[in-house]
Image (cartoon, rainbow, N blue to C red):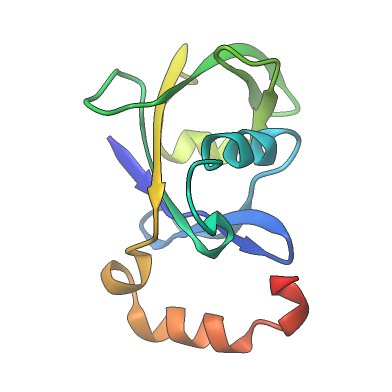
Length: 135
């Protein structure tokens, strides 16, 4: 299972993962809509959420992405039970050797990224963000 900690940066969902050299990797082209949908029950999700995901079902998963097709070097997935489609960029291959037929998801409140990866960097990132980023 993998875990990422998306947060809003200039009104765009992004995540950092130093383990695979990703910094402010953006969710675009519908992937942002998927995150909006799965985080509806979470209070203030724009402040950061934790998303666990895997190609195999795991205890507590709440949503499933179903592979649809390849597009522009990435892969398009449908959020099961909804009309929402989202493009996952080639960063997907940092986690999987090939695009899984299904990706199981669980979103929860908060982010432990700052405590686990680099607390000083997170503090710096928080304070350097322009006020408009939170609007």
